[in-house]
Image (cartoon, one colour):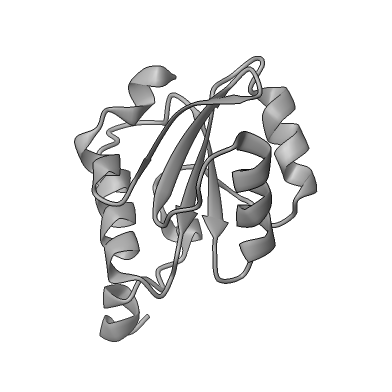
Length: 126
């Protein structure tokens, strides 16, 4: 990975210390909704071309000392814009990037975007 890739956010989520689930199909939203009845789900919407999104993602990951208290899902907006559109429609939340959505019992109970993801204790809704 080159220096420029790191700056512009081309870092792979697979290299993260967090156990991200890659969100790559609309059908996974059904599973996320179903699973949210038993365990809180979180969707992190990320643009790999946005410096703010990359910065927020890095800092978000650094906040964890251990495993996440929620099941984490990662959406690459450039590869899967249709999924982002479906999230906005299904959960009645305006699209933003970066954006973190907390889902319990098939509903978004909290959502934040940009640097508010870091300043807000979003996972307290878990």
